[in-house]
Image (cartoon, rainbow, N blue to C red; front, side, top):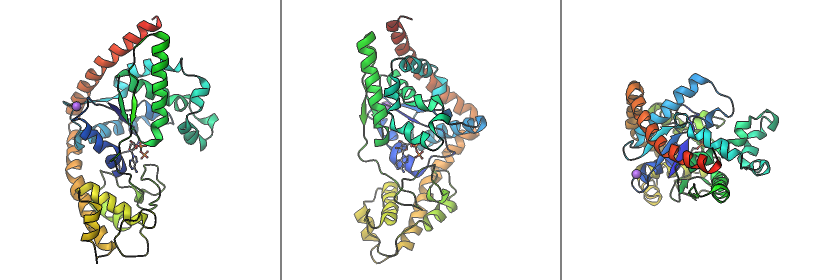
Length: 325
Ligand code: ADP
Ligand code: NA
């Protein structure tokens, strides 16, 4: 199983955690997991070097802090394993220009600045992603709906390579995680919580000060009613708060709505602020622990890179041999 996260913000937000990373922690028990901080992917749209360096380390520290176990899994930084870029070149030579042009995420991401101003790296991003997946012979790739097309490209490239040059790659399947929660923006509860949100008050970062996240929750947009009921259609704001509450405590939505019968949104928001504060406190402490001990973080990431390379270099060597290198 392989999954990656981009180091493009100073903290994961609750949506990243509840929608993705929390499942990564669980999957360690049942799968041979590769978790990659994909810094090569993070330079496709312009970046600041020092910021990237800091965010890469914070991302790795946060993954460790939430429970990615470097003994049970392989946790590494993409640029530490040069085989990703090497295999991506090979795949770019068996991907059709038209085929790459059909990737809808490039169309979306290039729409704002215009195709002419987008980097070729942004265009070929899904090819690098195919290399990420196929180097480890992953058979499962946990993805959201928006990434399904990229996993399809990985499947096509694996099959194409295997039939043209000889069997090297496992053909992966998208693994749509059923029970993962979708978290919405607190200020705009019909849009997903995202680091690119227009207002920072809509997004709760795992590294937010407890006072700050409590304040964001207090000022979350809700409707004019006062009854705490789950109704995604008509009460998206309250429903989102209930989803977060339930995901962080394990209490069901029904239990929560029963508990808040006769109480109002204010009580719900106040209690959820405390739940979030309790939840993030140990994560923040552990993240800071790794950041305060850079030698230890380097050591863990070097071990991860070595483990990853031992698999990636064998796959690349087999591919190079079939190609005629
Ligand atoms: P962002 O939208 O903030 O840029 P990414 O696209 O980097 O987040 O997503 C990283 C991971 O977190 C992906 O697996 C994605 O599906 C998940 N994710 C992001 N936002 C949410 C959300 N609001 N709810 C659930 N999962 C999310
Ligand atoms: Na495992």
